[in-house]
Image (cartoon, rainbow, N blue to C red; front, side, top):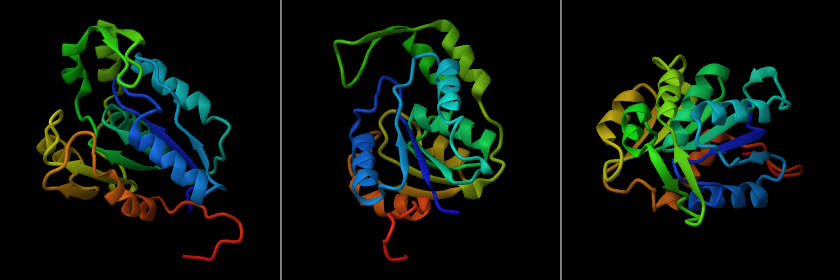
Length: 206
């Protein structure tokens, strides 16, 4: 089933203004106007973030479950995307996905600044670590639903841990790269191939 609805979930301290989110938004707008795109600003509370996403997609088609929904998740957004995919059975593209953010973000309790809007501040509360722990999904139920792009050069997350977590999924392991996937453009064709987005009316097949 083709993807008709595409959700993008950004990472910690990030936003819909991230380079990757903006590039995907432009691609969907220009090449796949029939696809519904949504990249929400996620609140710092993991529980509120996932609940907000669930509320936001509640009106999306569910005739065949959520098979026509796909989600792209970057870093912490990849962790959220996994939690969502395990619940709904949709497809997910993961970009250097966080594996154990409860452990990693325990070091970031306190006031934080937004990466793309430094004037904006938020407080990462101790209770958010417990919320992350509660969202941790178990083994992947349907590994074929996942496509993970992982960079060995990631300076934030351990590529070995990411690879082990998604070993049974479709993987693209990069010898270099970085956490932000600065060479994101090179991976767009593979992402689009996996997503199989609904083409615009009148477009030729394939």
